Amino acid sequence: MKEIKPANRVGNIQEYYFSKKLKEVAELNRQGKDIVSLGIGGPDRMPGDDVIDTLCEAAKQPDAHSYQPFTGLPGLRKAYADWYKRKYGVDLNPDTEIQPLIGSKEAVLHISLTFLNPGDGVLVPNPGYPTYTAASKLAEAEIYPYDLTEANCWQPDFEALEKLPLNKIKLMWINYPHMPTGARARMGTFEKVVAFGKKHGIVIAHDNPYSFILNEEPKSLLQVHGAKEIALELNSLSKSHNMAGWRMGMIASNPEFISWFIKVKSNVDSGQFKPMMLAAIKALGADDEWYRGINATYAERRLIAEDIMRALGCTFDPEQSGMFLWGRIPDEAESAEAICDDALYNKRVFITPGFIFGSNGNRYIRVSLCATPDKLREALLRITSD
Image (cartoon, rainbow, N blue to C red):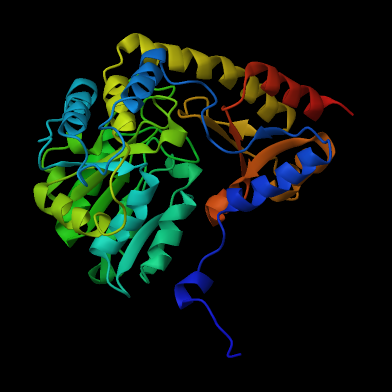
């Protein structure tokens, strides 16, 4: 039989780190190791009771189970627009400037397929979300990592960016509040990146799922005047409303960009489950008390995570936001991977090494706040025990 090989693009990417590592953690648990997982950022709390009730009641209706519009329910698009107006002060036309998503992660690939031809350049942050790189490779684009460093508060160095072959570059990924470092969004950075995109004809894609976590001043790139002309923004209910498994997200931009995006997306999926869209509408109407409750939960956990970082000899910026804590390992430590392996195999605690986010994460580790205070305290006890 003639040998069958996958497409070249499959050979250019690796299985997602957490996909592989969680299999290992599951095997250790099967062996009775009882691993405390502080790795992945999947909220462990429930959505609101009214959200779940809406889902359940809607699922009983006879019209709930058929195909739905590719562009989502009009009421859902309006709810996203109202949310952006209420929380960010951004005006969006729900009919032409918003597209619901099956989670914002899918849009990383769809944006890449919408804007990139093979060989086009993409600016990807280092450190940054690994999916930006993987999606760029799937689109057969050329990746240009740009450095984010602690010395520069994890903000882009625009002087360095100007030295790149910008005539080859079509798309730039940014993400604030930043994952994995927790660096907060800055309007000055947003204004510079919009000006940079317009100057060089580079589409700016801003991934914005963390703006409500341990952050009292949520910001959107689209608050910058004229940003919609050159930018797209992704957002999600995964973190802000404890709905990660529901896969409810959105993208916002100008009508032309959205229409191009829909051409790709409508050939990939067949819309979302109507009861979930109706439940998302309910979630988007949450009052300020919901967000205060979310942040009270993460603030309690953050204090214990800081103790874990100190126990490991790590330093961290106390001003970082989001649902992780990012820390620099001691200078004398061999590597972040060695610290994380020791924690996993000898202390039975799973922590993420920063190298998976890029070379600038090599001397850092990340602790997730998506574990109960009891689990976090157990992790601290294991790490500090002999």
